[in-house]
Image (cartoon, rainbow, N blue to C red; front, top):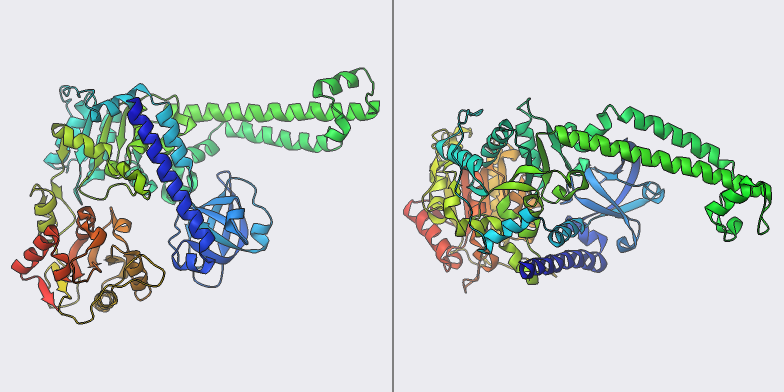
Length: 640
């Protein structure tokens, strides 16, 4: 156990160093313009203070030129005027517009950040790594128990008798109900395997509600803020639940802000008392100004006790007059009152937080925010973790260490955690994947998908899920024809083969390791334009490519959303166009070999999926070969 934990700490330090090194190297070697082209900086913006919100200072940075950036709400940015690495001013993005970006700061914003034109850089923050390391160094018994399962040092207990369940959501399917029943009756842990579109979040929302009906205190977490917000929004429909969302209030969606701990503290009845104390502090500060501050030049080695003693005797000392001594003593006395008032505020705030947390049925947070002091001593009956197959073991151990039982939900057939450091590659192994391999009987597959046409489901179902899935009747036969202003019938799936096109070659852009394929980019843009002209909304079309440079050149030529595979994880669109990019004679497909990326890419579409690729290059890989055979056998391949 000790050896395993020590190794985890070493791995997260490799990853922390790699993230910070990548950021600092990029900032120091790239121009601001180049960083902006990559979407990781915004140059020449002017700040305007918007006042305070939930205790944070809000500044709006804007310019007349459109801001096109990957920086998004919840990201941390570094603000600078010249060399970013010489600045220590960081804030959190709260809102984004076409020509502005709002940032929240937890400290006073210097005048230069408002008066001058500044640069904003996407910034790597090591607080998450510090929380993981601290949790591992002080791992609770429950955390160690969780590790014992994957180290084969402990066997999970049999489930208790399943309690009678009066379902709130009566439309749940059998596999969802089985997952909930097993989760409620497990003694140690249970795994909910939720592939694309199978209603994983819906299942978790019902499970959380059922746990609270048994008077269980629930900790619900996920790796990303978006996933936590998604669960919170759905739980808010249950008006009986008292919910509290932890974490930075500016990383929470606006709709959910009223459920945050920061908002509840601000609205708490004891907050009036705090405002009175703040007024008292302001008055004391004004009173203190008329007295002499005991700086070193006046103290001359005298401590506070010495100054108060001499002043009480009406004496001076060490060349300091008795009047000056009295004035300094008065300053010290008022300052002590100010300190006591601040301590009183802290005590009241702690009482408010304790009160809010105790009254909450469900605490929601990211895995990292589950390390916050506000719940350090809270005992949870159960931890329910979404996106468990995307969380590293050090990350997921933060919530697991706080609860008697745990439920993990995810899909290990889709993307693993994103790891930058080559030395930290072991972190891709997740608790979910390890447990489902070792204890398959402790898991339930959600087997009805509600997203896509049955033809679109057929290949991923065969290839990745052993034909364990079926389509719900509500989506079985949905097609693009239902929303197209056209008499022409289209199949739900199309593979556009570019293998016969001369000069169809992948290439590197100057100074880049990424890869582009200009022919595929043109085809993607052209298809998107045809659908837009046919009346499809741009919000209903997505273009996916595994390569960042390909994403960039397509983005420049279409208004529809274009992202890497990772950017579309957990998302869906009516129409998805995939540009596979690779086109070479030796069958080199690079990191397309990560078949979990293929699974994510081909399971985002609801009604229409178009894959563009060179079949001769791709078919060297056995899975892509089976995909090409599938489209050929079903007459879904066209050559250009």
